[in-house]
Image (cartoon, rainbow, N blue to C red):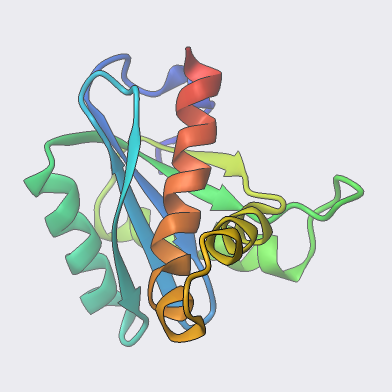
Length: 148
């Protein structure tokens, strides 16, 4: 399994950002210069292998060189059951295909995105549609900013 520190990911190429939840996985991608993260889609979780195939199809289509995976750290800095679940998700993903992968602290990402959508007066149904992929973009953008 290729777990990397963020700064040890390949230095060039697009990155795929993932925000795995219990029911969905938000997916975002960066540009090749790693300046901006863009929300791509939300995958409704079903069979893990099918979900992983979709993620890797996007990874290949966008010519990504690594994955940034949102890690749900508790506010006090500890990791709980959700963090264990994300580690298992990463292991399962890497068992299907070994690609460079780094974790990024995702504390309050969904809260920040929800607030932005509320300020934009986005309808509740629309918020539900886009929040996971926008949270993935928020997580990925944080990682990109840190890399700069």
